[in-house]
Image 1 (tube, rainbow, N blue to C red):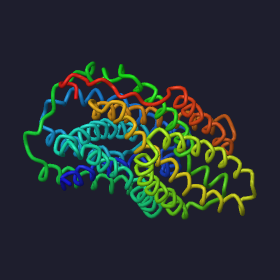
Image 2 (image 1 turned 90 degrees about the vertical axis):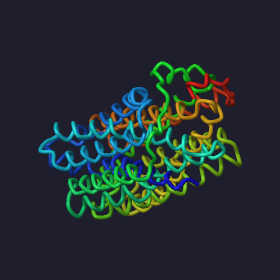
Image 3 (image 1 turned 30 degrees about the vertical axis):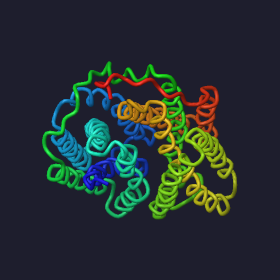
Length: 393
């Protein structure tokens, strides 16, 4: 396996830490910037929307340019955005910094996946992409809990300073390890979106959108759920996130293996149904005495992390089957669907907290994976697509 893939994954690790730790920082950010918890949640919504829309556009614009320059430059901008977030004097400046981070993160991730495919043997294409995605999985499992622990010790700004350092390390590693002159083709956005016309792609992307919406309606506000509903102290939150992250790491590995053995469609069907059940169970647990509900909640988080993160590798495998000749484009659009789900889920979760009982968040969140399950069932089996023109691959 090409060792340069792991340096590319360092960048997705830093991006993943920033993306998944911010939910645990929201109460601190809200108090420090003097906004409500729901308003602080707009940091997640704005980031996700910017990432989802900006990623395919920037990938189209920068396609023909030197990928070493694009990757190191976007990692540098990401680091600068994280530094600006840590130094921000108010909520507006912090929001601006997160938008910069989102633009850089979207460009980096899309380019890193395309580069991984370009520098790997054709037989190792899926494995190369899995290494890049693995950086995000490690961020969920270990980076986000570590970031939450840093925030507990020195505040949320310290977490952003550490993220900025990780971004700089990724920038330097890519600059020295990746060869010059590696370029993509000039693919207009219209060509990139042409993959949407292929049979099975739109239902698959809708499945990702609905599935992630349900998960992030709860995950974005996991800290207030843990503290306000289950009475878990803030000092224990890094450990709680670690438990979820370890479950996510196991789920990511198991999901890929199950997709190979059972088939991707069966695996994602099981993951979606299980996720809906767990979300509903969290609301049920919230009505129990805290002495009983809190331990069940912590154990449930490990199981939820495992079930939730068994979906992404299986869904990626399914998309590769549906559109094998347009893999980077299809996976890029799947990433956009994922972040649109993050935005929508965070927004819906915020509305629930603002206008309803926080303990009922799981009930509402469970509706979305149930809708995703209906899409999978109604869309039937995956259809192998006709090849795209060579210039669109």
